[in-house]
Image 1 (cartoon, rainbow, N blue to C red):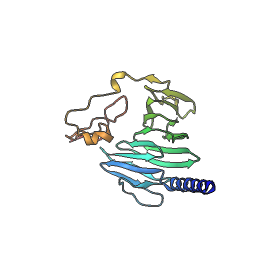
Image 2: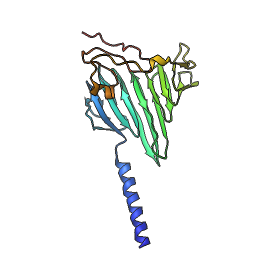
Image 3: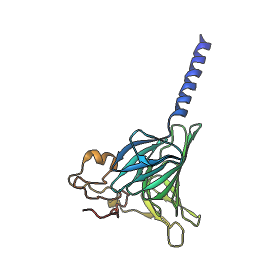
Image 4: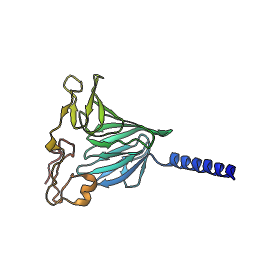
Length: 231
């Protein structure tokens, strides 16, 4: 009887491991506006919620458009006018490795390691690299804002700086990441504008109000979004 029970447990564990291995590591959860994806060797197609993404897939968002993507146990919000590539997505023995190439625009990452494991999460732009293991941050090609945990931020000179919770950094004219500065407290929780659609706010977090006016890039410093003029 004990032998049968042991075999059953081993079989259940094997089935669970196989199911986890077969599950896609990156999935589009929500889409607002015009978002397109391009799998390796294929044409650009509209992004749909529930679509699985593979290694080297390109993601592109148009003006006033956002995609929310589950990458392993982490969550990536792709902001408007952004293009990025999923360079590496891997899971091995409870640990996850994620490598993203931010070609243009801005992303927000909520990095969470799998239960009992760890996550090695890196976002690389043409001018800077952010490497984290369990934190939340906003990044564009030259700027980084961190609201939780610590991020190692590196410019073209290859010398990293550690940016902690509530701090920001940028790449200076000399190609180095500047020492982090504290972000003002009042910038962390801006009030929503009147008439904001709550269903959109739930995942876009204040990108567009009901009148169609741009509300911001939703980074922690809450700088106004600089994009195409609004009619």
